[in-house]
Length: 543
Image 1 (cartoon, helix red, strand yellow):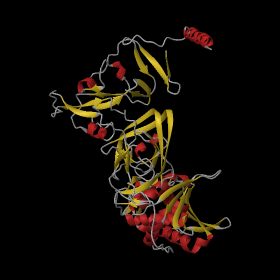
Image 2 (tube, rainbow, N blue to C red):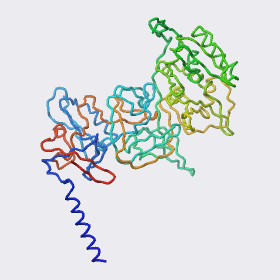
Image 3 (spheres, helix red, strand yellow):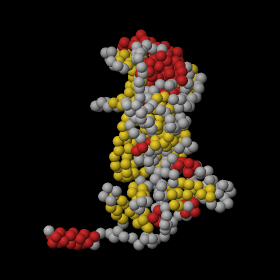
Image 4 (spheres, rainbow, N blue to C red):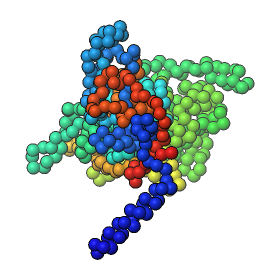
């Protein structure tokens, strides 16, 4: 066996040498010949000394822009504590403190604070996928306020990917291992039942791997409110819009209830016609209420027609009405609320949700549970309704159901004590009086606390992820859940990350970069090679 093994080893070595005679040479004459990693970025592992896809790059410091505000160090403090401010005498008039950032790359995690590009993000006041976000968009932050996006990051990531499933959300939050999540780590009771305690403090940022099922993630409650007395607009009537009329509608709770009817049952057709579809059993209730509201605000009588075997339809021919209702979306999947309605006073929002529930909702009766339910095919509207209810002091959950050859439907459900409270606010009967109330959620003035259902992890390679930099607050709300954004926090663009230069291009014996080192880019003399890294096979090729 020893002789055969020796012969086999010799043959393998010889064949390997012959094969590589006809392949490009992998060695370079460093430092005369430089490496240039191909792609939007790569992740550098200082312990192993290798680069993998996903690294944004090293830091570049512009001394003529840095004011010593320390925002970069503050932003990094909760993530890697890799940035510290050092005193360097430079006598710059814009930096009277003479303190400048230094980076310890032995600690730096290269800000892999990213989420899946398809994740819905709460904007002002709509919903956009992460990949649709652009600079200037206003996103919801952990404070309940909206702040502008100043930068969008689009990268490739290799490493652990986390899927965090939260009760009350229709899909998981998909993020990288370093993405900070605002949460409460719930302690375990000392009693025999070993239950998790219902606490709301301390609230701080955690990496997904530091959380467990049952811990609370938080959904910020929108603070903005814009009182409105009347809705006014110049409406084009005919002659290709040359003839216009100023439309003035009193912004009363009744108008908002009519908007709710449209979100549930309304449609626009042909530019001059509005239709509301109801069940025939609702003729004396909802249909009559909707007809009177239409007459009150638009001065015209809607025509009642039969719609199939069990349906009736209210039809209104009016260019002004069509122009008004079209702003709420044409077609059920496109229904949404514009700013002037979403940020209205609470009593108006209460009537809006009531109109939506009367049209598209019902009471669900189960042996041990009764709850209020609203169904819509609009993803944006479902998230907006959940946010509005939270603003009204009501916790609502979202679920998504898929049926064959049908659009996905979103269920906005209000359970237990929240359902009883909402029914009381609407002044409707709700025969449900349990002896005690138990649910998974907590509600405070600023947040809805939603427990984690489960956490899944998987390893990915060259996976597309995205992040944003948010002005001032440095948080945003994917899926309506508060998380941190990218820590590229300098408002003056004095310190930022770039993949134009790699760490190996510097002749240094340490991974600690002083302000002067960060400010000096490496030499770019010599030949540059393009390098492709295959993370799965662990090989690299260049040409």
